[in-house]
Length: 147
Ligand code: 5GP
Image 1 (cartoon, protein in one colour):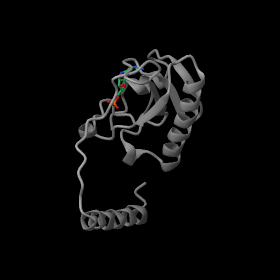
Image 2: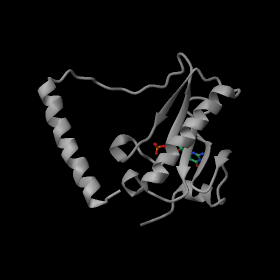
Image 3: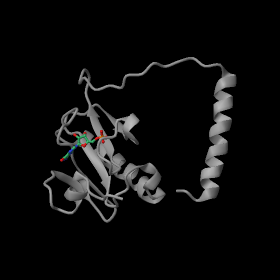
Image 4: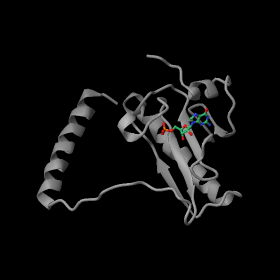
């Protein structure tokens, strides 16, 4: 596994970052190309490339710190009427830096941020079928101790 990413360099102190928080598990800093002013990234210290490689407890910590930062954004000078969390897991999901990170994005009306999607209206039977498939897979993931 190649541990090099720009986030590993930031965590090691070899690349600059505008940090807002750090503890034993995670570091949070300003995104260098913010989609809205105040856009933050919460990054685990361990160089997990994707969610499958990330310890569940550290994953929980990412969310906890994200929650605290969302509250801080609303209290700060950043214009923030709402917050989006975003996490890209895999190339197809838009991941560009292969060190897991949670985006914490402050929102204001008309800020231009958004997700493009084409929602559908499946029948209940189709939802139930896929739900059953995912339940089975979750059981296998849990039994394999994969996470
Ligand atoms: P992804 O598409 O992988 O979810 O997001 C990667 C994010 O990392 C992007 O929002 C990008 O602007 C940010 N980023 C890339 N390089 C750097 C950097 O050197 N410093 C900081 N602070 N953010 C970066």
